[in-house]
Amino acid sequence: MPTAPSPSERLAVGAFSVFLVGAVLAPIRQNRRAEKRDGFPLSYYPMFSARRPARHTVHHFRGIDSAGGFVTVPYTCAGIGGFNQVRRQIHRIVQEGRAEELCVQVAAEVATRHRLRAVRRLQLVMARYDLDDWFLDTTRAPVRLRVLAEVAVPHA
Amino acid sequence: MRALERRWLAPAPARRLAASRVVIGAFSVHYLLRRRRMLAGIAAQDERLYAPVGAAPLAPRPLPERTARAITDATLASGVAFTAGAGHRVSGPAHAALLLWTLSYRNSWSMVFHNDNLMVLHVAVLGLSRSADAWSVDATLRPRTARSATTGWQYGWPLRLMRTVTASTYFLAGVAKVAGPLGWRWATGESLRRQVAADGVRKEVLGKPAAPAAYALYRHVALFRILAVGSLAVELAAPAMLLSSRLSRLWALNAFAMHWGTWP
Image 1 (tube, each protein chain N blue to C red):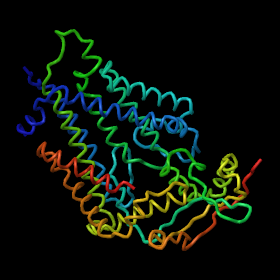
Image 2: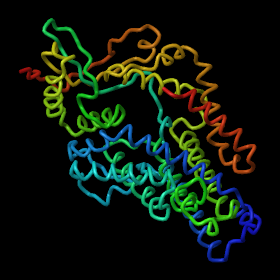
Image 3: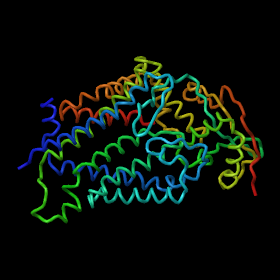
Image 4: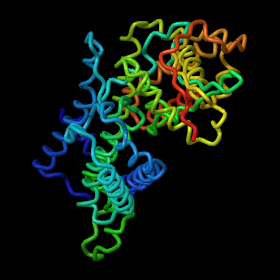
């Protein structure tokens, strides 16, 4: 036969429940702020809410082989925290004006990758891609590209 | 208020709560095991990228790699004990605290992963409640005379709290969309379509193949409109699932479909 909770048990369960639900809902205030701040594990869940233009800008690396051809350099050369974290880190480092420094670090990593042995030079670029071109016309060329840093790959 | 209290503290089977502990605990262990190497390795990253969130501000500077590895392993060990219901009075709160720490630290390197949030919150509720009174090492070792009731008020409220927390997070995600720069125009689906496309472009240029579905579906604008309207409905209507178990099940099915449909 189930027993009923005592008054102190009711109070403890009630307080914990109200506290947790209140804490989870509290970040809703961020929506009204000009400078929004996300947190963990209490978030206002801003993913997917931003306005997305028809052209998307992304910072990425590209290798150049001895014939002048471009080689895709995987994000894993720049960090180990997973795709989205590394992408954000690249963006942040560029914003901090450390593109050259990052390019040197990644070039050193590229030099250790057997699959990238053909890469002679490495560029960190800021490229803008037209989403319709990319997905409907399969035109992969950026509509705008700026080389932020370029270094030689220090192959042994 | 009395009615709400009665409903919140209504009895439930101990096994129902125990099943949640086993499933969510096993998931947390699997999640950590798959990321064990990365979780230890992120400590070796550029210190300037460290921006502590959650519990991580307790360590204003990145931890030494060896310490990060030890904490990850301790989190894994506590997760195994939590899932098995062994020493739950200690392993429950310990796993909740260690998981909060480990994933706060993981999210402190320039990117907050929102998919970790509910797992941390659910483990906290399960770790601090009597979720190991059934289907656990503790219950097996307890003398038969000292075993807990199979049904009681202690086993219902944690499930209701997890459900309320889940509904709240989805509701917040819906509010963020309509409170964002697009407002209700988010429901046209254009923003969702471009989000999926931008994600595909990023992946391709950063050396990770985009989902083939992104290419197949991009031209179908109407499909993204349906997905956007469906997503908003699931998110903003999430609190309604708290009204009945039947609505909860219906909502869960729709939420599953939403995640499946928007998985990049």
